[in-house]
Image (cartoon, rainbow, N blue to C red; front, side):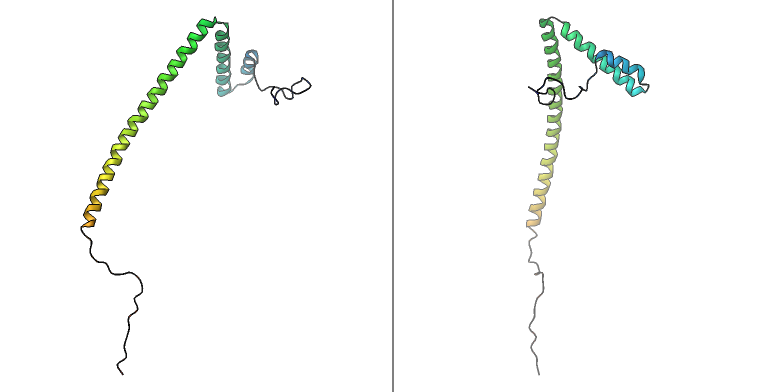
Length: 129
C-alpha cells in the first residue's frame, strides 16, 4: 500500500501529475510554443506506442521487448569497447611517462654530490685582544 497515493479513507490526497492521451492532444491545441508542441507530440507518440504494446499478443510483446533489449546490449557493449580502447591508449601514455621518470631518476642518482646544509650556521668568533 502506497502512503503517498492512497490514504486510509480510500481517497487520493493529491491529484496525479499525469496526462491522458486526450489531455496531451488538448494541451497541444492550447500551447503555441515550438517546445510545447514538440513535447506534446512526443507524449502522444508514447501513448500510441504503449497502446500498441498492450494490444499485442504476449508472444509478440516479448519478442519486441527482447529485440529492444538486444539493441540496448549492443549499444552498451560498443560503449564499453570504446572505453577500453581509450583506457589502453591511456595506459600506453602512462607507461611512457613512467619510463621517462625512471630515466630521470637514474640520471640524477649519478649526480649525487655533497650539498651545503641549509639553515643558520653559528660560527665561533674568538677575540684576539
